[in-house]
Length: 224
Image 1 (cartoon, one colour):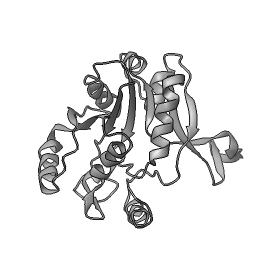
Image 2: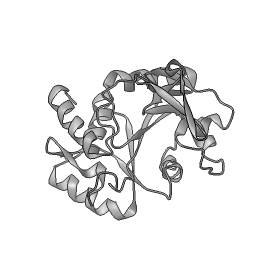
Image 3: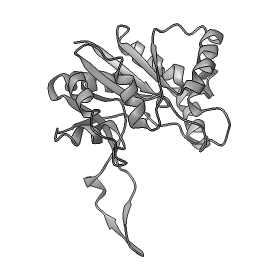
């Protein structure tokens, strides 16, 4: 079955505290975004990669590709006003039946095993997302107070979130609402169930200076 990887990279680096968008920050001498794309290419060299970038960032990306001799084939879609609109723009490049994995551009440490399992399960289940356990105590805010809740009833969601292409394209024809915080929430709005599978703890989303330190440490211990 044809596989697509739709990689969304629209960050501005505000929480990182620097002018350079977070997806372009180097770890181990290479931009985060390149390492993310390499993870999917290593899983399947035939995968069709669609990169969603704001128009204003595309010239800089082209410059980085030349500088790093980055030659993994990919198409570029224009970023939108929100993540929802960015994914919808990227889906315009999905022109054949298959599976689409939507992935955050700043998650370069997703394991090959997790990518493979998400695509394999999506071929059967239509909608699959990787999750990890909550390991810290969780409290629910109740007006002016708060209360402890059972953390076993909650999961932390990662990407890639993988779906049947037809289902995902249909879901993104819905009007946008602020409740659409990820692709699973968009698909669920159609009434379609979403299947959970185990993610990998290293698959962090790099958004802060602390995350960048963790990423540097992970790079020293992981092969990506």
